[in-house]
Amino acid sequence: RRLALQFKQLAVWGCMFTDVVNRFRNDPRFRWEMIVLGCMYVGYAALYMCQATVVISGPAMLSDPALGLNKTAWGAILGWGTAGTLSGKLINGVLADKIGGRRVFLLSLGLCMLATGIFGTLSGALYFSVAYFIALFAKSAGWPSMANLISVWYAPNWRGRIWGILSSSSRFSSLFTTLVLGSLLLVISWREVIAVSVVITASVIVFLAFVLKQSPKDAGLEAVASNDGDLQ
Image 1: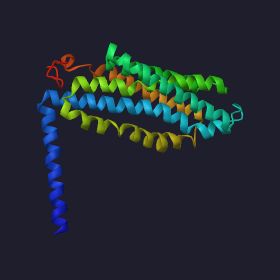
Image 2: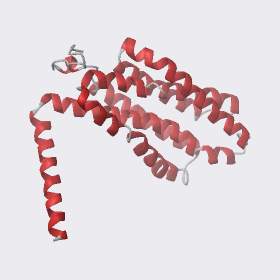
Image 3: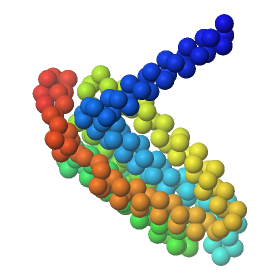
Image 4: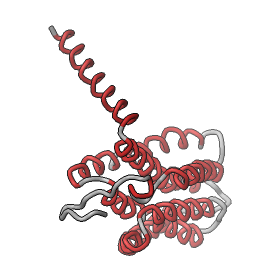
C-alpha cells in the first residue's frame, strides 16, 4: 500500500512537471516569467558568491605571511563589509526606482565583481577594507533591484512565491562556494580562488545583459496590472 502511494505521488509530480514544460513551450508570458526568475536567481547567486568567496578565503589569508593579517584586522575588514551592506541598502533602493531594476542589477553585479577582483590583488588591511566595503555596497543593490523587477513582471498573487524561490538563491550559492570554491583552496591560492569567482560572475553578467528584460513590454508582452489595476 505504501509503495502504491509513492507511485501515485510520483505520477502527480510527473504530471505537474509535464504541465509546466507544456506551458513553458506554449505560453510566452509564462516562459518569460520563468526566464526572468532564472536570471534573478543566477544573478543573485553570483552576487552572494563574491561575498562568500572572500569569507572562505579568510583562513588562507590569515595564514599568508606576506599579508601580516591577524584576527582583529580580519574582523575589521568584515565589519567594513557590513557597513557597505547597510549603506547600500539605504541608497540602492531609491536608485532602482529611478533607473529600473535591470540596470541596477547589472551595475550591482559589475561593481561587486570589480571590487572583489581588486580585493584579490591587494595587500594590507586598509585596502582590503575599502574594497570589501565597495563590494558589499554593490551587492546590497541586488535585493531592491529584484523587488523592482518583480513588481513589474509578476502579478500580485505570484510575488510571494517568487520571493520564496529567490530567497533560496543565497543558500544555493553558499553551498556551491563552500564546497566547490572552498575545495579549490586545497590546490590553488586564495587569490586564484577569488579570480575564479570573478570569471564566473563575468560570465553571468554577459548572459544577463542579453537575456534579462526590464519589463514585459521589452519582450513584446502586455504590462502586468498592479494592485490598484494600473498597468506597469
